[in-house]
Length: 103
Image 1 (cartoon, rainbow, N blue to C red):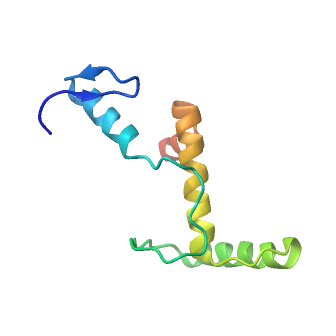
Image 2: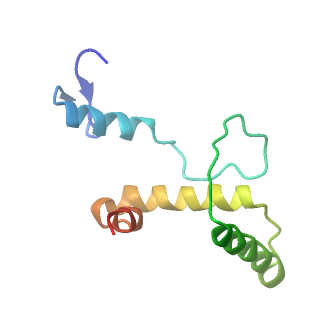
C-alpha cells in the first residue's frame, strides 16, 4: 500500500497500525445479512473435532425438529460468522470473539 489511507472516520493516516485498522474496516461486508441459499464462489476449509462436528449436527437437527428450520451446516456457520462480526464491530474489545480468543 502506498500513501495514506482513510481511517473509519475518513481521516488520512500514515501510522502502520492505523493503516491495518482502516483496511480491516474497509474490507468488511457492507451488509450484515448472510447470503443464505445461493451459490457461493469462495470457499474455506475448516477442521473441527468429532465432538464439534457432532454438536453442529445436533444443533442442525434441533433447529429442524424444534423450530421448523431446515438448514445445512454451511448456512449455520455463515450465520454464526455474521453474528460474530456484528458483535466484534459493536463491542470491539468486549466482543465474544475477543474474549474467547484471549482465554
